Image 1: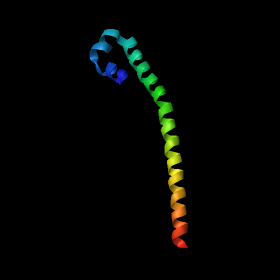
Image 2 (image 1 turned 180 degrees about the vertical axis):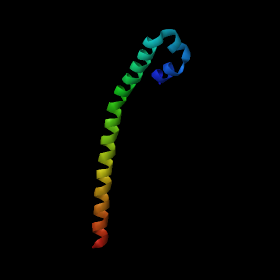
Image 3 (image 1 turned 120 degrees about the vertical axis):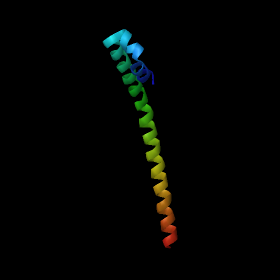
Length: 66
């Protein structure tokens, strides 16, 4: 959010020029890097939940077919 706010505000980019754009881009890059572990963790949690769901569905179908 900080990087986007810096780029959007014309005051910051006008006053600092190319260094301001580089600073804003660096803020965006750091934010993306910090969000990656969270995305990986959530993906793993969702995969485990799906695995448990599929196991219960298979057990349910087996008991229904008997």
